[in-house]
Length: 233
View 1 (cartoon, rainbow, N blue to C red):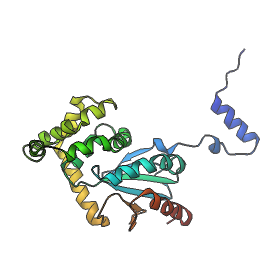
View 2 (cartoon, helix red, strand yellow; view 1 turned 120 degrees about the vertical axis):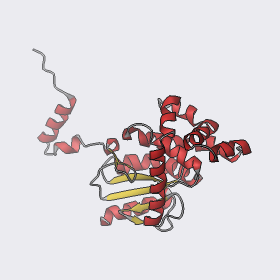
View 3 (cartoon, rainbow, N blue to C red; view 1 turned 120 degrees about the horizontal axis):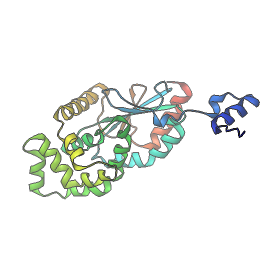
View 4 (tube, rainbow, N blue to C red; view 1 turned 60 degrees about the vertical axis):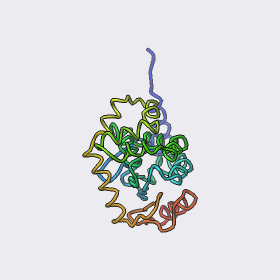
């Protein structure tokens, strides 16, 4: 008779033999723990010592730079181990921000962070199109029914093609871009966050409910996270 033993069982058994708790071998990857609580979208251990809120505008070049610079380190060294939970909250400065936010929130909460990264990582390809938009394009973005404005932005800036790589069809995105209830909620939350936290620019960050003054990039944020992990505050 052949005995089949799973790899996980072998690891747990080996841990017991050398006196290590099984949880050290089969640690949870908190990068797969998603939440959407009405204020924003979060990933990580809900009981993490450090709860980081990032306030992001999709048309902010510094926000794209922050995402590119921080993404790997945050996920591997902080979120994965359950030390830090990260929440993204939208800052809406213009109609393009709103269209992008509607797209990132399209679908289940598990899709948000990859959508969020896709939009920001590709900002260098679509933001120049926005800056070079014709007067006719800008009129389409600012007049008429809200769903039509959002769809015009998505078409003119290439959001439809961009999100095809994420498995979205045009019909999928059109439904999300036409969700006026969600659009209103996103805009209202942006105003609320600006007032409640005193957000004056993007990206901005709050650790455990307190806005970090003068911190707007990964170089300055990482030491603040490490300090909060040390002090528990």
